[in-house]
Image (cartoon, rainbow, N blue to C red; front, side, top):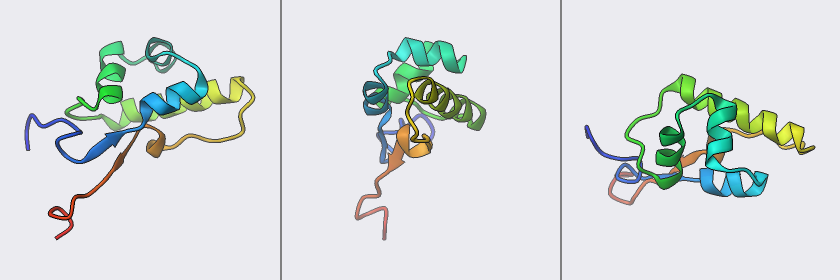
Length: 92
């Protein structure tokens, strides 16, 4: 499994839709989360090969801060970044 991307492992990125809903750019999220822009880019495009829990927490916390500043009540979770969609083969 080494070297496979999140897409290769049946993880679907939802971050682009989340950014669109918040009307922010990938770069704005990277700055707010204090995460490398390349990391955000890879997550948006499904090319990330791994995600550190500290990085994931920083992204979700940043999404929640941005959301709060925009007057939204909704709290963001990991499923606003990506979700797992098992294939029939992986479920067996």
